Structure formats: structure tokens, C-alpha cells
Amino acid sequence: MVFLIFVLVAFVFWFLIALSKEYTTVIDYPVKYTSFPKDKILIQELPDDFQLQITSNGFDLLKYEFSGFIFPYIIDYEKISNHSRSNHFSFQTNTLLNDLRRKFPSNVKVQDIFPKTLVFSFSSMIEKKIPVEADIKYRLAKQYVVADPIIISPEYIMAKGPKAIIDTMTVAKTEQYDLKILDEPVKKMLSLKKVKLVTFSKKKILLFLNVQQYTEATIKIPVVMKGIPDSLSVNFVPDKIAVKYKVALNHFNEILPEQFKAVVNYSSAINAKDSKIPVFLEKKPKKAFDISFSPKKISFLFSEKQNSND
Image (cartoon, rainbow, N blue to C red; front, side, top):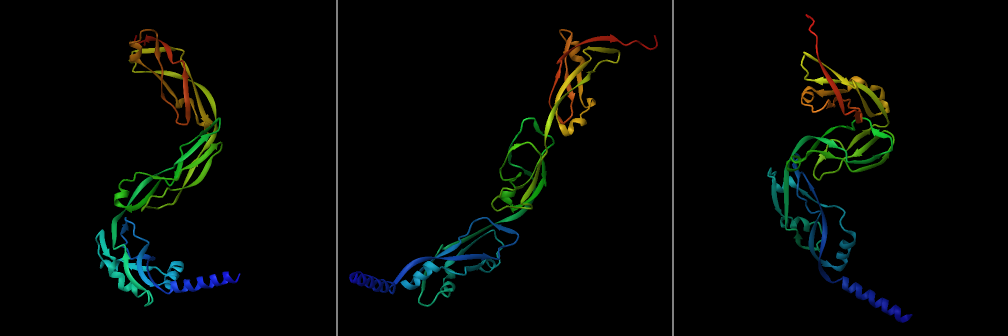
């Protein structure tokens, strides 16, 4: 036990003697930049710290190693650049050495500084109005549909940043969201995806999906011939076609027969190899979907109109 005490005391004396000697090392000194031009944006990163080569005794070096610095070194851009309006400016950091030495006690010698050069690169700031795009994934539960166009509010935002970046931007996307399986309307705030050096007039946008249950319906509508001469009339067999469609329940009563229009072409009739010609749906309501009809072809019979003077 006595031997161990002697060993410990010897180690402490050796350690204190070692710390009293002079050493050279490199420490980090935090830096803060101020007074950048308000109409420009910095496009090249600057170091957060200077690396200073210092010489001092071990006691002082340990203090800087473990406690660091409370206040950063302030670099006033307007002052060091002499109010330069250039987009590119280089500054030699060795001109700061004398000022940095005054930040340390006299027994700490600041020998060198790294990096040797600070490069300030700026770009002009511009603004542009761009549309918002919601990056969403979802699945619809059985018998459900998005009944109306997806609503994004606001639809457009202002993007501000370096001209080289803003000029290439065509859309502002949200972060990706997985809405899972939907069986009811969704109203959700979405965060915009960050773009380096760009700020948006809004940080979040509102998304609304009108998810509704749908049903199927069938209606019968007449067929009209396009391009038929005034001297002819035509009869069809059948004279109506059956249109089958799906519609969200909240829009069911909005679908009317006159919103559909079924047509055949006179040119198809005169060139037909048989007595049937194809039918086309020329008009249909936007809120109906998965639309089908039958029959796809119908028979026709021309007759001349009687002259009212005869």
C-alpha cells in the first residue's frame, strides 16, 4: 500500500513538471461573420472556426483544450472589404494575427492562423412566383374516390434566393407524406421541402382531398348524327344508348342526361360496309368517371325529308 502511494505521488510530481513545460499545439477559435450586403446572399460556406497555432505551458493549453472560448471572434465584412460591392472578395487572415494575440494572455503566443484565406462569394438575390406541388402517397379504400380536384392552398408562393438557383426552379415541393389508406376527406398542413440558400414566403401549405364513397349509375341518352344534310333524316336502332358511370355520392344528383352527348358521323354512314356505324361520346360530365356505354355500334336508316311545298 505504501509503495502505491509513493508511485501515485511520483506520478503527480511528474505530471506537474510536464505541464510546466512549453508546448505548441493547434486550437479552434470560433468565428462569427456580420454586416453582409442585404441585397446579396453568401453562396460559398465559410469556416466556423479558425485554427490557431499557439505556444504556451501545458496548464494554459489544457485550459483552452477543455474550456474553449465563450465569445467568438467577430469579422465585420463591410470593414474588412472596405464596403466592396463585388460578388467575390478574398481576405488574408494573417492580417488578423495581431488582433487575435490581444485576445490571449501574454504568456500565450499565437504563432499562426489557418485557413490563410477567406473567400466570400455572393450572388444577387431575386424573387419568383412558383407553383406548389404536394409530394403525397395514398391509397383509397374500396368504393372510395377523390371526388374533386386536390386543393393546395396557397397554389403559388414566392421563392427568394440566388439568381442561379431561382432561375432553374419551376416548382416548390413539399416533404413527402404517406397518407396511408383513405376513407374520408383529408385536411392536412404540409411542410415545404427546404432548398439550400432559398427562402419561401410560406413554410407550410394546406392540402385538402375530398375523399368520398362512390356509386354506379346508368342512364339512357339519344344519339345525334353529325354532318347529315338538311334534306335527310335518320332513324337509329336502338335510338338510345345506355351509359354506365361512377360518381361520388356527394355529386350523384349533379349528373344529368343532357351532360352527355352521343354522336355518330354522317361520313361513317355513307362509307359503311354494313348497316352499323360506331358511336362516340362527344361530351361527358367531369365528375363522372369510369364511363362506358353500349351498344358501341348502332343501325341506321336514312329517309328524305318531305318538302313542305309539295
